[in-house]
Image (cartoon, rainbow, N blue to C red; front, side):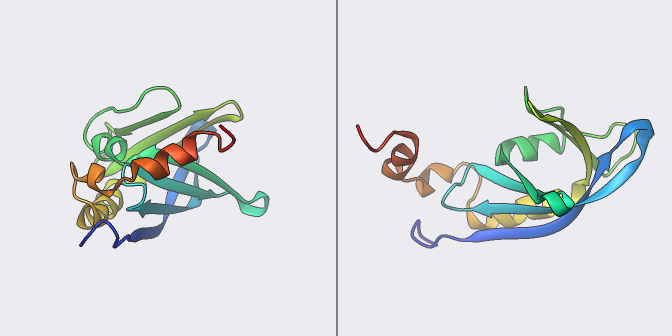
Length: 141
């Protein structure tokens, strides 16, 4: 595969929203990986009639969070200590906070599929510095 052979990995799954008093509410989730943005994973939460909420997190953060407490600030991922096979994903924004539980095996399978597209440590080979800069910088300079 070459850098011009871009691929997308898309998985639909369910995370459990951890509500007060430990009540779990299932939430449909779409995990997306695109080789054009090889360092990131998109997470789209289906929030019912109000639409969807999109988050972008580092692929490495998801991988690390499967085995150790990972992340700082708005996104934290860690294995659930008292129940094997679950990962806790805590998200925080000015609009609020949410904590989810996800199946660790499903996340690992998704990550393995992304590694088949872009191997860990090879991400830089898939990046176009010009494209990245054009997205970051204003076009009227």
